[in-house]
Length: 169
Image 1 (cartoon, helix red, strand yellow):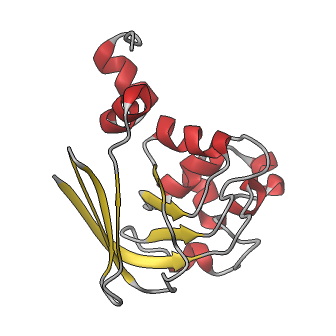
Image 2 (cartoon, helix red, strand yellow):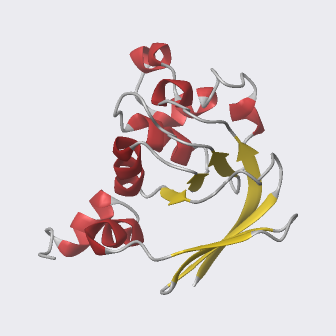
């Protein structure tokens, strides 16, 4: 079992990939270690400087909508954030997150406030999310199939390095 405890960093609905990292910043470089300084600057110019490695992004519906650029997921990871909770994800962002080892969890996020202490525990039976301030709990089944295997390996590249190829389902 793995467990992660961090503070919630609350965002709203429809956070698109250009809000995560602005197109103007990507013209300068695609190096996520540089771009992480500009994470979510369109939403909050001071956000990147306030991020702690254990933080958990918490959003409403349609997180990661917009263009299907992989760098949106890699910039979040480069900042030290490993988990995003959202009511729903844009499908392209969801797959980019998994392929890069960022854990996207769909759950009801309405009652999670900025700064709430959040614990995410993952084991063979699935994922449990707990808001320690309110006692709210949610359980999700384990991610199955190739997506679960890729995420368990830490992303697509580590999966292919370990397995050498995709396996039949």
